[in-house]
Length: 474
Length: 127
Figure 1 (cartoon, rainbow over the protein chains, first blue to last red):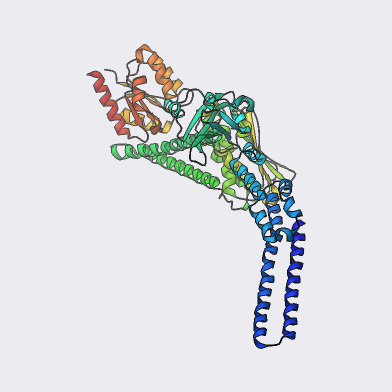
Figure 2 (figure 1 turned 180 degrees about the vertical axis):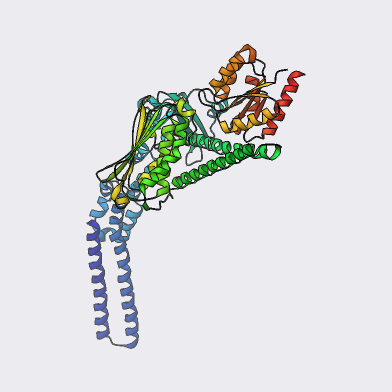
């Protein structure tokens, strides 16, 4: 508001000066009328006009400076009251008594700008801006600022949580006292030196192993001197678990690829180097090679599906499918393994099955996966029931087993990629840790879902549910 | 003279069969067990001259079987071969030192090479 008032006063003064100059020139031209006098007077008029115009320039600048500073202060979140207090004597002064340029100069070089600069500096240094600590407290990483003696002068809330210690008990304490036990010797030596540093620590907690990544950088002042350190402490437990799961997957995949490959090589070599193998035996060996090659091929297909799912590029090709025939095919795929383990396998179908528009291959793979898991994790002589039911425009594929079951703690994680149970009975059986994640994705891509109920030692029931209408017609 | 008796502990029946086929043709008396626990039972009921065991098996894995066999007086010195598809994870030196394993066979392996290794091992044992 003050700026606007300035601006209008200055504008009026400038125009008034210009009118006065023009009026004076006209009077002289009329009164004298001689050639030289006229030339001198014209020069005077032009000078007056220039002077008058020139006088407008600082007026305009003055008119913009105060609001601009006001805006800047508001922009950095600072209340402009203090600035206005500083400017008050200047703003209230009679402009002609000071001169506009003087006012401009005062504004530009005066205490107001110093105040503004100091506020900005404080923000950049993080010395007092309330917003800075809010930002630091919002970070997921733990932050600690230490002085030259390694005492903490600032800690954020994330660090309090990571170290399970209140801020009051951390400030002024040496951060090195809070480092975990059992760090390697080279790390223990390095932390006593001022150089930048990065290391990881592991700690066993009731919830499992906890992994932290510690990084330290020197804090350097304007003169280039080290005044302390800034520490960043990040909880990398989830990353470590993901790495572990991936390593287990690679190990499992290697085993799954090598086993059929080893069988193929062994039988092919036996056939090639052994004389006098009877024809029946030869035929049996060739069949084994073929079976193992298909097993290898199936696993490679699974890996490709998984890879597509991982890349988020898994697509489905929906076509009208004869569900009854598909279920027969699925049954014939899983029955041999059920028979080998003497598992009582029953299939229960509704009187009439709808024809559905689905991606036959992925649905078949998903259901074979559920039934394959049921036979894998059910002890010899157990029972697996595959029930198909129609209910409220949905089709339910229930796979119920009398297997080892899943604990309540692990149940919410079974559809996560690479998840494998910690149960030793599961660990003994080869699995990708991706089958259920794949099945879940197939259900999702068809607009369906998958549910599970389980009791440890009693068995599990997986329900693969698809919408009947969205998938196609009945 | 009785044939040299070899025990194979391997849950992959297809692999166990081809190794048995080759060892039998080479003149050995071969018994197959489909997991570690079954192999230990076999070992306790009959003395074998050499044991070939897989690493990963249900009920009782290869390392546990080897540890249990080494606890038995009659198997303290018996040559044991460990075979596995997990090659890169196994440290052959550690296995030799810890359980006195004579050889680690990495899958895929050649059955004729297995026969040759068995024959060589038994010759060394006789010397």
